[in-house]
Length: 217
Image 1: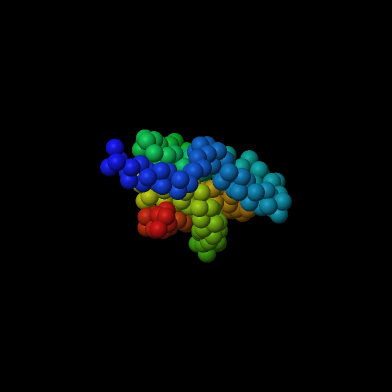
Image 2: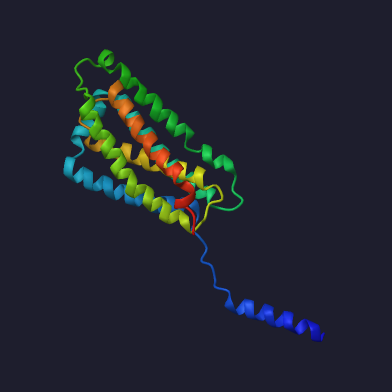
């Protein structure tokens, strides 16, 4: 029995030094917190630009509204999937959650390539005007990605690169949906390629820095 006393003393010492760990909120609640920040940005943009131009554009080209809806669904599902991957024991299949929204977003946006045939009188952006869309999406994706990273660092995801890809997809999709509020042009091939380049850039940067951004070290 005398030999067990040092071990018991060590166990008691380690037990007294333990710090209680605050349990993380479930993924849906953390997703909701992030979406509140996106909604706040949307309110500011709506107060500045109003809803009428956006609704008028959607009325003339309903596929743009479907593309916007797809972007919103993608943003919500990608953020949710990122938080889900930070929960130990949750399936990797959560990474596929944004796929349906992304398919709707891409499919509806693809109709913009036929814009001149579907609606010949629409206003189509030229290359230098489309570059403003790239700047918008990238600029808004930076703070939205940063916020997601801060919220996810406590979880310490076991798949940081995949989680970072989902962070980039969620942020880019949210930024693309915010762009609908102030986008003055109907989608055309040039505009869609610019949007795709912006989304790819955001996702790629997040993926490249995923391990470092989500590491606690």
